[in-house]
Image 1 (cartoon, rainbow, N blue to C red):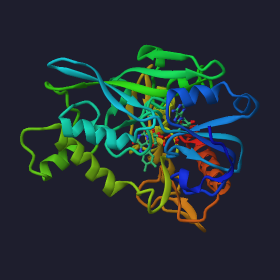
Image 2: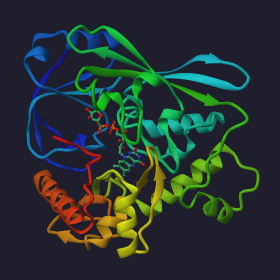
Image 3: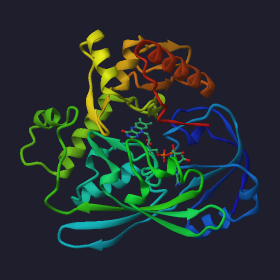
Length: 339
Ligand SMILES: Cc1cc2nc3c(=O)[nH]c(=O)nc-3n(C[C@H](O)[C@H](O)[C@H](O)COP(=O)(O)OP(=O)(O)OC[C@H]3O[C@@H](n4cnc5c(N)ncnc54)[C@H](O)[C@@H]3O)c2cc1C
């Protein structure tokens, strides 16, 4: 186990923030991870598991051990005429995995094309896009328990998935390292979801007749490339806030005042409001403050134009949160993990 000191984290986060980790190491196998999780250093120091760093905002140097999870592997564990079950190492790049599935004609994750980060982080916040969440395909999640290094498997149900939520952000937070995920994918009779966003329209523009997994993936990639800033060019971590769900009485009150307020049904009789709309109504869209700001097309995305500080981005996020609360009496909760 090689532990480095004082490591610059700039290359390891898509926001492009400069911050140092007191200690930094990588784990590429279960055995390496078990040795680390039961080591004295690990017991002594606070720790942070890092995948692709695409859902993290570093507001200061990290006074502990950053562990970059790099377990690789894609293995078929079960297959029949209809489905394939695939075990994927936590360190596998998510989009590359989706491309692998698309190339095989396996269905289920095509709407989740081009989401940055690793496969191991996917269940953390139950990644979702264009009407699909990964919970639909997760068969199980394999973890290593901190302290003992024991393998603990979570079934889909045990993961307690919700909108951008799982048990790993709550009761199981900081207790497990995710070592692999197991996905069930369809080989035929795919159930496509094209009703969300501009997928259907893009498919029409592309002249697509009989649908394939690849057609949908191509459409999603096209839409994402035109709408979202590419983190390799402008630092960002995707949506900064989750879309809030509100009670019907608050919704009715707001609808009288703002007749154009967009809304969608949410579980538990709640109503979901797009956070991007709320932020735009408060005048933040496209606002720039030195080298940080709110994206000009997608107000839910906070950006670092280069050299921005994490602390300043967090300050901006808190100002946005306060203004939305003041205008709409709605509290926005960050989706991004703030360190
Ligand atoms: C341009 C852009 C677009 C995005 N679009 C979407 C989108 O459409 N939908 C969506 O849901 N998200 C989106 N995201 C957010 C992000 O890509 C996902 O949340 C992704 O799953 C994060 O993966 P990561 O490997 O980068 O995780 P990291 O940012 O490295 O970590 C995220 C969290 O997971 C924990 N973690 C990571 N790996 C492990 C592990 N192996 N074991 C235990 N804990 C771990 C970390 O400690 C941290 O708390 C977007 C981000 C960007 C930059």
